[in-house]
Length: 85
Image: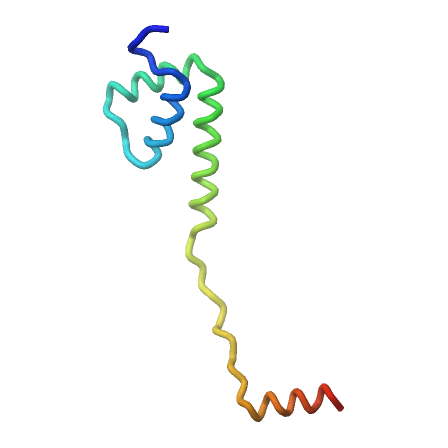
């Protein structure tokens, strides 16, 4: 393999980094060339993208249900009394 080509471990690391920030043009070209030739790294990239997308979907803030009601001491005693009877 040529010294200017990235190896699999380097491509995996750079693909992971590229999910956060875009690499320089030349590195993007080398990564794409490697991904075209290597089905394992290509599959790894697809898996990373899939996991990222899943995390984005499931991290969407949701409206919380109403906060739990706090029972007064009197209400607690009534419930306790009705359960014991």
